[in-house]
Figure 1 (tube, one colour):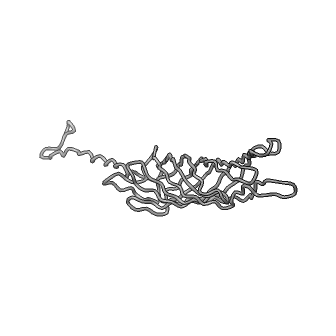
Figure 2 (figure 1 turned 90 degrees about the vertical axis):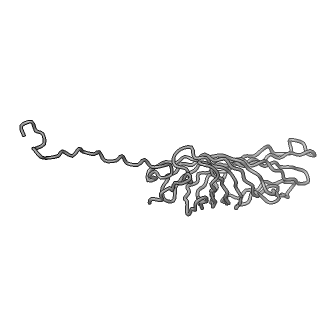
Figure 3 (figure 1 turned 120 degrees about the vertical axis):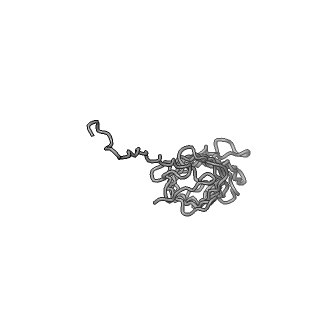
Length: 229
């Protein structure tokens, strides 16, 4: 027709726009490239040396990961052990430890409210031994000694769903110190070992983690988090 309209007898069908794509609910978003930032606080306990008993420690850290299959991450943790004393006949030594660890980790398995995680990495321990004596003059007692030791660390643990974006952590760790050092009391030609940190030091760790950025560890109620490769 001259005016470009529909030919006589024809019925023009209006175009219907396609329906908008459904927005993914929280926990249903694509996890292929979503970054995750977890902030962690924790406490632990474990032996350090012969006669030290269970030594408590506290710490904090952060982990950056990818919300994909196995949820790979790398964490940086800092901790301090409470000072403990070891006594000899003449000298008492107070030992304190500061630790830093870098721990790449993976999520091996999960259920609706639990995960199974492993991490393997390492870092350094800064061990300070400060001797003192009530019976010897100060000139006869060495000053505080501080040494750095490289340490390898393995960890296996679980995360437990608490509330959205917060999980409870339970983990067993093992530190391996390849450098054996002993702090001794020397009297004449004899030496008595006072503090000797073990080469293998196990610990139990409990704490909480908060997901500050990215999809939470566990999907919100009614949603499922995809496990895309």
